[in-house]
Length: 584
Ligand code: PEP
Ligand code: MG
Image 1 (cartoon, helix red, strand yellow):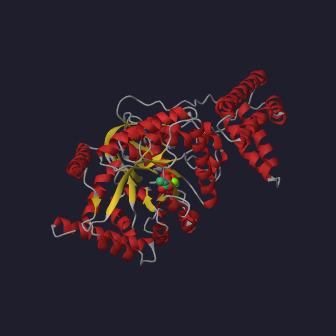
Image 2 (cartoon, rainbow, N blue to C red):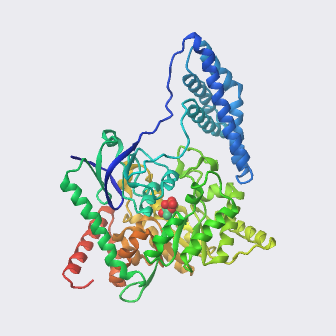
Image 3 (cartoon, helix red, strand yellow):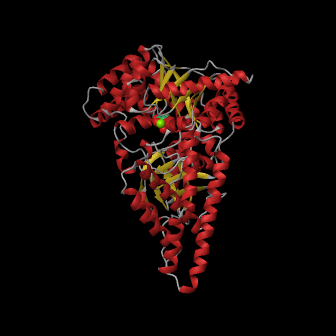
């Protein structure tokens, strides 16, 4: 028995054998040919070119009416690269003259082209470098016969171990036999971790090279609270882990009586308790937890479950299912937020060198207006069937908000002209998740109906820490003075403008921050369903002066560490008092 240590990313415990997926990476496999192999190798290369061309042409045919012109132009330019004589002839020449295998020949030819483009000053050519890299990756995958099909998982209970999973892969796993995720990369706020929490599956991430030791024969005990992965646990450890999961079930059962009670402090301050969901299957969990509504529907996962962009009618059907399921409680739709770690090739998204600073959220949507309009139409139509709100991700300033709202108006005008049932009056808000939006919160508040703070991104961008990079995960510091100040001023600006402000980042789902959020004055908080009862319980125990006093103390510190230490001693003292039965 030995223990690996990672970042605890989704609570819960599990014991099962592992299923390890080792990714076939598109590394260039170089080999030397003998003269007799040349013609066959050239045939292999041409076949890969043809397959890549048909893949891209099929994408263009399917998506040209949804994606913006620029995105279709990108795919078209990749087609041109595949036809380019420089690429084709020089690769074939290398195969023939240097007796190189196709992969090495392709890589060297691409290297030359990229070098030529890279040295040009012109931005246009620099951009083409991304296309060249993308085309090379696509061709290498074809040459290596790498399958782009979804993951194939065992049908027995297992712990899924792999270097990384994309959010769309995680969404496709849904509720299968996966008992826990153990991943090499990621942090608490990577989207895989968030989805694992939503699905109620324990996860430990950021294990890096430690995974190399594991193979499919291993039995592991995963502790999603401490980040421990115990390999070949002895019987005492297995019993302890099973007991811990049983304890969790008991805690949840004990809190069941809270389900229909409001999240109200003893002195009468009421907080809206909402849930974050990604997939329709979570509606049931949201209701069972007593959610008063959905405070963040990450609609991108609905797209990820389709092989291509879902049509307006397809979206309408899913949105209605969610609205009907919430039975009169409002659903907050966030428009598609792709980019960052949520790239989906069929949407034309590409690998970028700084993806979280790149083509993401509202930037992607405004560049792909037909796609955004399709989604807006579906949301406005679904809104005719129950209370609905709408918000936009990654807003950095008023101009983006105005453009997005203009598209809302256009969509409603079209629906009215077509005589389709819809509700044009739904509240329209924005996520505040960029430092820029935080800085101009007063200007934004004048032009929208509500704010929702996305702390995952607000912390990432404010503290300049990549939310996927486990090396800088320690900088995820919700109590950092920069974050507390930023949130306090966003709340103040929202209230000064008479609009409501909520929070839907992962910080809200951590029970330990409930008093801090109360002190900050949020109107509603949106959390994972599994966390909702515990957080509601804390709210019901905490008078406002206590929460405000705590916040004032935390904000008096110059460093996050000092604030964390003070916060921990506050929580310990509170726990002691409760155990002794002497008050809040
Ligand atoms: C956030 O950034 O806090 C948020 C809720 O959005 P996402 O995690 O989907 O980026
Ligand atoms: Mg975000």
